[in-house]
Structure formats: C-alpha cells, structure tokens
Length: 439
Image (cartoon, rainbow, N blue to C red; front, side, top):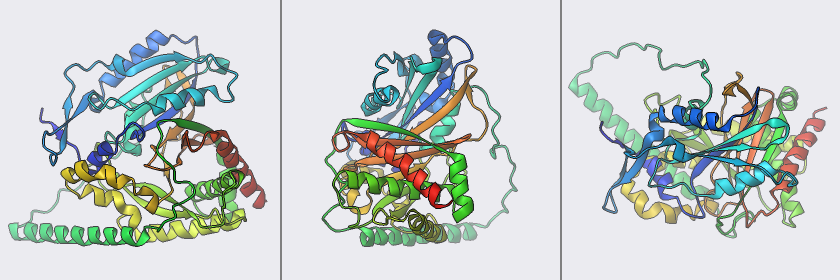
C-alpha cells in the first residue's frame, strides 16, 4: 500500500509540537454503566475496535532533508493495547477529581514516533460511572474528523451519511478546457492566498500584547462546564442568532469577569478569538487530516451589558459568514495549507510564537449527533472537548452540544491560570446573567 502524504496543514500542526505546546486535541466523556464494569473486557473491546480504524494504525515518517515533507505509514509493530491505559480515581476530595486527573494526562505529549493517539479508561467516579479520555494529534485529524474516528470506538450507531450518495458524472472536457480550468484555479488560488496574507498583516496587533498572553508551560489545568441547551435556546428565541453566537457571548462575559477578578483591566480592548471553520462538507474528497479555515471574532470583554455583548458578537459573526471562510485573516489555515511542507519544518515553530499578535484564544465548536451513544451498553452522559493551546495562549476553549447539554472544555496554561475553577464558575455565571437579561 502506498504511503499517504501529510498535507501542508497537517505538517504545520506536527511542526508546532513541543513539550510546552503539545498539539493534540482531547475529550473527556463520561458514561453510566448498565452493569458492573469489567475493565479488562472493555480494554479488549476498545483495542479490537481501534485496530479496525486504519488511521489509528499509522505513524508519521518524515524525510531526511530539512525541506522534505512527511508521510503516513503502517506501524509494523502496532499494538492497540499499548495506546490504552486504565486508571482509578482515589482523591475524591478534590473539587473536580476527573478534571484534575485529565489535566495531567492531557499535558503529556504524544510519542511522535508512534501512532498519534491515546485512550485512558478512568474508573472510580461517583455513582459507578466511568470516563473515557481520548486524544488525537491535530496532524491526524481536525475536530470533525476526530469525532468520526472516536465513533469507531463506540457501539455501532446509524449515522446519516452522504458518502454513499451518487453524484452525476461530470461532462467530458477537452484538453484545452482542462488547461483553462486548471490555470484559472491556480491564478484564483494565488490571488486568494495573497488576500489572506494581506489581511493577516493588517489584522496583526501591535505591542503591548493582550493581558492573557503568557510564557509557555508544560503544566495544564482543565475546566468542565455544562450549560443547559434549554437556556441557550431561550436566549436565541428572545434575541436571535445562533447557538454559537450565544456561546461566544457567554464566553466574552466569563472572560471579562475572570480578568477583573485577576486584577486586570477588561475595558482596554476586546479579546480576539480564532474560531475554526470546518471545510469538510465543502471538500468531500478530504477524508483524513485537516480541512479547516477560520474566522476572527472580537469577544467584547470591555462591554458590561450582556445583551450588548451578544449583539456585538452576532454582528461580527454575520460579517464573517457573509465574507466566507476563504477570506480574511481568520483563513490562515488555508494559507498554511498552500505553503510547501519544507517551509513548515523550517519556520512554523518560530512563526507560532507570533500567535498573540493575531488572536488571544481559540474557541472551537465540535459537532456531535443528537442521538444516544454508548460504549459496551453504557450510555454516554457528557462530552467535554479540548483544543490545544496555541503558543503563549492562557486558555483554549472547545464546545460540544450533546442531547440536553452544551459542554464547555477549558484548557488552560497551568502557570498562567493556576485556578481554572474561577474561569469555569465565570462561564456558568455569565450564562445565568445573559438568560436573566432576556427574561
């Protein structure tokens, strides 16, 4: 079987990898068992299912020269069980023992010489529940693709899919037509790339940096926050906008309170979020790796009124959507995907240190289906996703809606944010304040 080449964007995420900047996504999923938990049986089941997922059997092999790219290849010594661990929580006096355990787990970089994933089964949760902790390197998959891979570890489900849908065969084209089309595409892409690059330069903010910028650290803190879908729906009904708009406004209010509680000025300027946008539906030929663009959205932490914060976010996201995901500084993943892989090997890690000039945090939405999910018959209760921290970022935020809950995963630099619980509490309070303002 021929080795599959990493895309330039996949290579960029691989090149950003470091002890203090691990580039893996993660998730903490909790389950309520229907019967006594047999951890040995569950590990065997997870290993069998993981071994059937082709991408989980592959490792990265980079070329010898500084300008060469990298390819996926089958790991000749692959053993899925080596990627699966079992732990039990004992310190239940910790305010959130699962989050504390997961913080140490997620801080550990993946072995880049092996398949880029890890699963941890955690028992000892109250009420006989257990948790499954999953992490995939960002070079392996983006958020949407990571969800698809993780579904392969769960019990069989019937998901709607477009992969089997037949499409009309394209009309035959002459060689001259093909040349004109290819030349036009190349010229159009070059112009688009130049536009993105120009927008990035215009959007870069001068020093001083945001008060949330920090030194990189190997330490991590995690916060798990559950919001009610019904509350978010009530806000949408009263004020309009999307679920994502409401969540961004809630996060703006939470970051405002968090900054004030830390003795920092929240009225100096907005914080800017990079909001990743999946292009997977627009690029049906992209099965694995990353198919991403993004928007930049100002989070109005300087505004005290929660309804005004929501209006500002709504207008900003509407402008982003009207412009589309292939324009503006937020489309930097598209630009990264058009650079030669060798450029990423030489320059991406250095360029990553400039991230605070462009954005202060990442806020990503990881879609999940609304149907019940299970593992060995145990129903999935909650799913908290986590996005890797960009260099010099204090916090990264990922959000997933599942059933009647919206789950917010906060991943913080442990050196800059030793008490992530205060930020988690601020998210809950911000949601309550916005809900009450709509009453």
